Length: 302
Length: 195
Image (cartoon, rainbow over all chains, first blue to last red; front, side):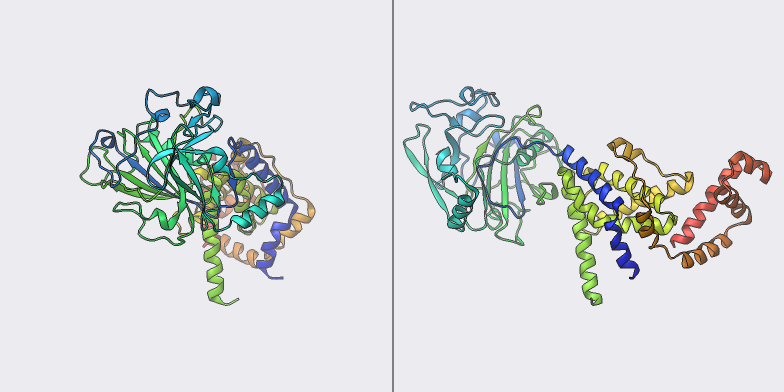
């Protein structure tokens, strides 16, 4: 047996096993509890965030969008219903049919009608039941359903808040986007709210979507990713609007006040940021993406 | 395996180490994958330097505990930085051990980890890595390269286990001087064996 083989054998010692158990226990103790369930989860191979932040001037009218920004949903507008609440009934407004509606809120049950932007760019609501689709009753049935749905788009109607008037459609899942969620995952929410707080506006509003990398590159900007290694890789894109007054990254030469328009961040499969770039002053164009609004959690909620 | 293949496997392992350590920042349960990848090499690193299985095991455990505790500060630069990070901490641990002749346990205590005592089978398996004949020749040569006062100080302190007070009395110098000779001698010895 050579030295390399003997070295490999160290992994077989009782010491190695016992020490491994100690680190396993540490990891288990430190793992945060999952707070929200995902609607449909199949698998995600990797994740990339394209994070976009628009400076305060955006709200003051200094920016223009290639596609005009949609008005904020009432529930997300300052002065609207509370941003964070305890029970779904007290958090969301109710329409004439008794259906609750609004953007998903952290720490609250999903409303009956969830805020979404239709493929035609109009803001509206999709039925939670439509979004979730048929619910499998057994794991075997779930697998059969996934196999039948693989590679196919699912198109659901987008309504006005009355839950009756259809204004467009919303497309769920296609190609290799294998995770469909009605709410961003917890780590993504934290990512967005952390960026907003660090940039000086914890009350910032956000849009997000899950798409594929090839679609994310249409996001306009000088530092936008020009090419992607895997065009089918799942990609989270989020746009945060706020009054940003603090620099998040090193100062560009010759620029004093913070007026970055957007940033691009990449995260690995473990949702940790591994790369970031951006600082373009050019407005962002997300008109090619179907974005959903989300209310960012405050530090206290996290 | 061809040299090119080995090189590619080596690169993949470096990259994997970075990915695993990065992932464990937010997901501490993933640290065990980094542990699996690096522990054997790290233990071998220590045992070849300390020639003592138990000390090597303690040093490996303390180093990995320190890496675990500071993993969120690790930044993946894509150039084998996880390995560099790990072995920087390892070298620091080894340096402290040489200086004090005892293994620190601050990181393990902070994390609430128990010290693991090696059994006879583990000791045998770990010591199998040590080529005593070769190392004996190296140590002997390195020892011979030391200045006389440093060699004498190391003999009294390390081999005979004398206190600094006894050493000072025997060498006719202050305790401080005896301590400095041991420290410099160990550093020089380590540098020669490491190089």
